[in-house]
Image (cartoon, one colour):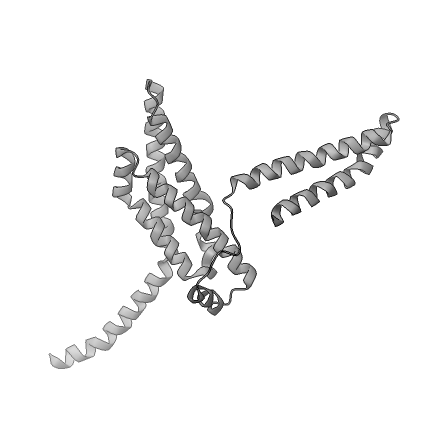
Length: 226
């Protein structure tokens, strides 16, 4: 609701600002009455409102009052997140969760997609990366490529692949497009694996350091035994 109100207010502002601008421009070429200036300004405002509302409808709705467990709220607060940051994070992850569910469904829809999923663990890796982000929400920006590029892209490609594959009549061009799409889906699956590896790299490095320290502490004892 707040977003819709903002859109309408912005549309009214565009109308009010554009009226004197249009009037000034048109006065150069001739005399136009106030009604025409107002109509043109209103038209610009309505165009903005119409386009913005259509874009808003395409976005998954986020319910700000959606229940949040005390444990998760404490988790977010313990890492120093403000209320606005928590709202933004939860909205982002709610959308990501919905997209991962779509991905899981799509990757099981056809044998070719199941093979790619099995080969690269696309769904499992996406779910693991989702949990890793929730565990470390202050690093949301480090998962930007996965959340805003790779995950939406692979969903779009798999959905189109399924749609085209269900065509009753397939030509040589159809099979060529399917092959290219499958290759792109495979490449994106590998990229999602890399997204996960990059995101948890710091944890892996920390563990490697701890193992090295532990080995250094253990080695002298072994030497004494020898």
